[in-house]
Amino acid sequence: MKNLTVKKYLFYIIPFCILQGIFVIFSAMTAFSSDQGVMAKIKKATLKLDKATQVETGIPLPKNIVKANVEYQGGTFFTETRKREVTRFKCSSCHNVKKVSIQNASDMAHADIKVVHGDKSNPLSCDTCHNKDDRDLLVSSNAGKIDLDHVYDMCGQCHFRQKKDWIGGAHGKRVTYWAGERVVKNCTSCHNPHSPRFEKRWPKTYSVPLK
Ligand code: HEC
Ligand code: HEC
Ligand code: HEC
Ligand code: HEC
Image 1 (spheres, rainbow, N blue to C red):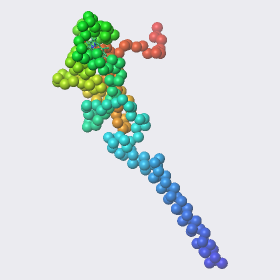
Image 2: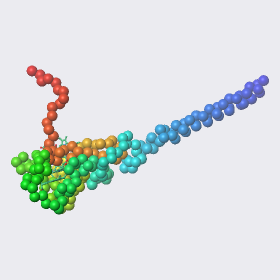
Image 3: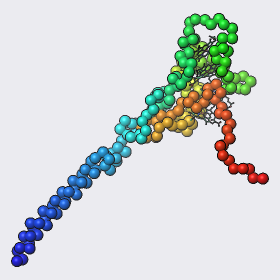
Image 4: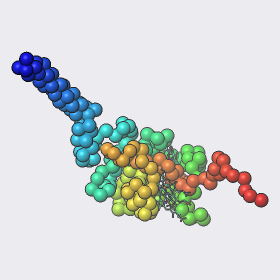
């Protein structure tokens, strides 16, 4: 009688325990190895951020961006392109070898542009920023030329402090998250170069002043 219970035990309980053990191990394995698994997430999170393709940024990179000419702490970043936003680009479609002999032609062509930038009584001249010999490009003090997409290099020749802040991310605005490739707004995404000061605005709602 006693022998029988031991046999029963061996026949039913032990195989049951082994099966259950296999089931637990198997389900744990699938949970940890699948894409959504904890281990997969930990592995991803410890990848270097520079290899941005391997990190989920949450939102896709915007299309019209260009790699900045400058680096921040050894890392590259991107900024918004500008040329496709500029209605009268390419300038060289008019500014070419053919001379314009009409009087006040520049007023007719660009009367909408009023420069309110620099000294009040002596604002910056067009040629301070726009290259005289190649209107498609901007002026660089070291005799080079600056592409409109890299306008931050032109502004930064005078506003070097703001440019430094912008490179570090303290001035301006990010378009993406910090994870993955950093994409920031360009200077002229926010500032009108001809009149860079922002209009003063009242808040939409405010408390009535106390009497
Ligand atoms: C539709 C034709 C046209 C386009 C496009 C155009 N311009 Fe002009 N622009 C003119 C004409 C015409 C003048 C006057 C004659 C001249 O200086 O050649 C002029 C004059 C200028 C001047 C001299 C203004 C002055 O007061 O001395 C600047 C600077 C200038 N353009 C910049 C640009 C830039 C930068 C672009 C491109 C973003 C551009 N233009 C695109 C037609 C054009
Ligand atoms: C502080 C530098 C600066 C000065 C001064 C300046 N510009 Fe510009 N201008 C720019 C930049 C930068 C852009 C490109 C703006 C952008 O990225 O949206 C531009 C854009 C333009 C455009 C194209 C605008 C459009 O949307 O089609 C014209 C035309 C132009 N400038 C003409 C002039 C003329 C004429 C003067 C002088 C009266 C002048 N600029 C003075 C920097 C300057
Ligand atoms: C040749 C030098 C020069 C360049 C290039 C230049 N600026 Fe300026 N900017 C000035 C000066 C001078 C002032 C006036 C500073 C002041 O009043 O304290 C000024 C003022 C400003 C201001 C403050 C306006 C205000 O009154 O509060 C902004 C914003 C600005 N610039 C943005 C830009 C941007 C954006 C660019 C490039 C598209 C640019 N600047 C290119 C010389 C320059
Ligand atoms: C996301 C928008 C944004 C971008 C991008 C941006 N700025 Fe500004 N900037 C501002 C605002 C907002 C102010 C504060 C304006 C005010 O107080 O009226 C400002 C102020 C300034 C001033 C006035 C002095 C100061 O520091 O308050 C300068 C000069 C200036 N910016 C230059 C630049 C230059 C150069 C770049 C590119 C390298 C740039 N900004 C990029 C939004 C921007």
